[in-house]
Amino acid sequence: MVEVDWSRLKAHELRKLANDNAVVILPIASIEQHGPHLPVMTDTRLGQEIAFRAAHKVYEKRPVVVTPIVWSGLSEHHMPFGGTLTLSHDTFRRVVRDVIESITRHGFRDILISNSHGGNIIAMQQILDELAPNSEATLVATTYVTEAGEDLSKHLQDQPGVMHAGEAETSMMLVCEPELVDLSDIANIASPKLDEKFLSAGQGSYRWRPFSHVTQNGLAGNPARSTAEKGEKMLEAGAAALARLITDPETWLRPRDLRSSETGGVLFRE
Ligand SMILES: [Zn+2]
Figure (cartoon, rainbow, N blue to C red):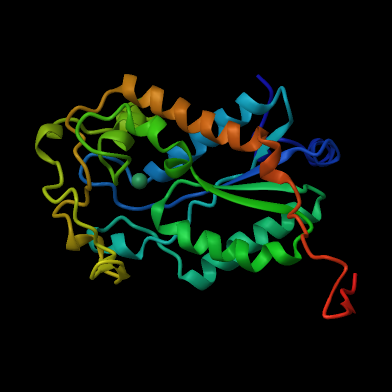
């Protein structure tokens, strides 16, 4: 199998990949509590797995390389449960920015930031808003949970979509790290308040709260009927969604410029 792991390649092999216009996947995730049954690596492990699977799916059409994952995400809301390592927003922005700029300086021009942790989504978009206007690379950000959407949800029996440490993540971890999943009390640990949103106020407004506002044990969802079979289908669905995104030419096209040559009788400067 072709090597897609940046950290296992040699510098000259990475220079060749840049010359061959390879896509770079930069996975970002978290180390945070995932209830009493899953390890704190869950988002990091799943994000890595999906990135590598996606890279192998795409490679025949276009070379892809996956950087080491940025495991250090934004997880302040999980701190009350222990086990969680979080960065400040400022540090996270600088880490992701500096890694993107390193990749770009080596000549890679299409970079997919592939996120596997809900708490990173807004910051990831802000980082792209800041970098993209002046970057030599095209920067695209995705979260597999939203990119794969219904392709993931259709495998779930006891919750509407991928939730924190619930049926989906538990099933996928049964594939990736089965010896680290504790199934001993799995029928009794579902979150009782599945529908409650912890980051909202009023009808469409925002309020920050810790995750302990909605769950006693750190879960959102119901992992009772998690299986490795479901997990395998969901990992494949997540990887297939990323592969579609990478191979869609629209993803990497330069923005259009619909301006006419002048307005108000004044030419636009090049
Ligand atoms: Zn998670």
